[in-house]
Length: 300
Image (cartoon, rainbow, N blue to C red):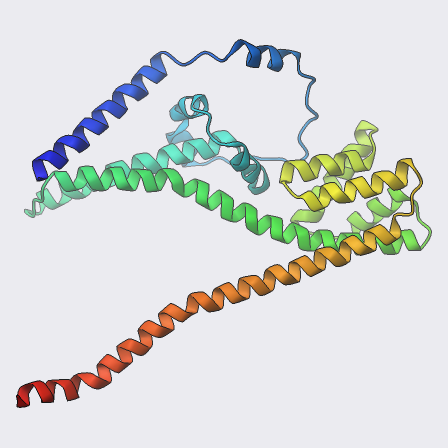
């Protein structure tokens, strides 16, 4: 059975290596329709969210970036998460390759160290463990990026709720739409308000409407509440609609949703604590009942 498993693992690794080599030497050509759409498409506006991060993982896994991009990585949803987390796609792909390579090499180094110490183990274990750790290392940056993006989006929604209240109060004081947006954004601090200020500054520099840049920011960050805010403000700016009541209702709805999400997260944490508490209780019962059970068994 061990020989069969070893042969299967070696065959799968050899086939995967040949496929990766063939893919690198003969990359697939894009379809003609995709090339024409890319050439004839209108230029996209410059991104509002700035990204930039380098490190040893980017240098180590740099050669693997192009093949991973050719495979279509990362997906569209993960791209948005990377934009929110402020990480370049090339850095993320290089990190995935670096972690996968590290997971593949660590068991071999462990085998070499044990062999030097006179404690040899079978060579099947490093191969299987290396493949498993490589797969885990390849997925670890994705999980970290998704968790970081979810945390930042939650914080942005909290800041957006406060921003809506400030805009509503400023509009109630008689200010215009543009001045209400800029004054309210200038009051706040932090990651979310920095991006809102950058979007409004981009609107002033490019002579576009602020709701257009806010909508673009909402699309880049994947926050539909910001897109809805931009739509409401655009009605006030273009059609003269009364937007104060709409902003107040949106702020109330956003706070209600945040409260509901917080309650759901608290209930989930409580349910997760049930299993450790039950295990602790069972261990305590075993600790208390063990002496009595030992006496009964010895008395038989």
